[in-house]
Length: 162
Image 1 (spheres, helix red, strand yellow):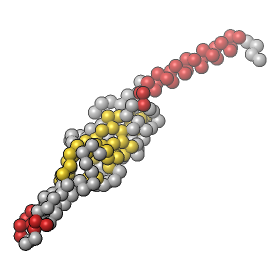
Image 2 (tube, rainbow, N blue to C red):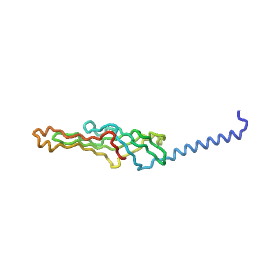
Image 3 (cartoon, rainbow, N blue to C red):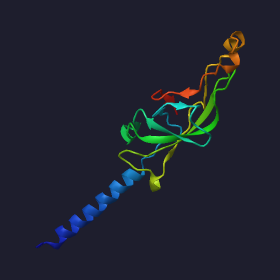
Image 4 (cartoon, one colour):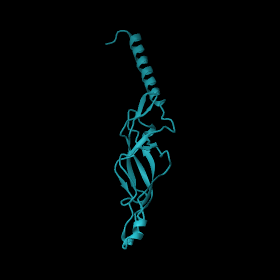
């Protein structure tokens, strides 16, 4: 039982003020647009197996920090989207593929407003890959029309600047 009403009232005001400061401190931390991050594909993405519109899983390679505060932890997951793809063909025709980075989960010590995902894009725009062409060999060898070109591949774990 509290005997002194002024002490109780002061404690309540203190708790209220401190909780307000904590809420404002979190709300004021923002990830600046244009922040450089490094991501990588989780698995090899090959023109042999994907089609336009397929999603490609990515992960964050380094934590995202602002002012010494970690906003998104290393390993946060995200997605890329296959924009276009041409599988390797006969007569040494190489495979080709384009992928755009889409978003990253706000996985970390802080959550994005309304649990929205962080929009990202590759520093160089759309990512492109082209397989090895084997046209020369296909012309030299008698059965060259049956030689298939190399598939386009984005290897897992290769750092991508975004």
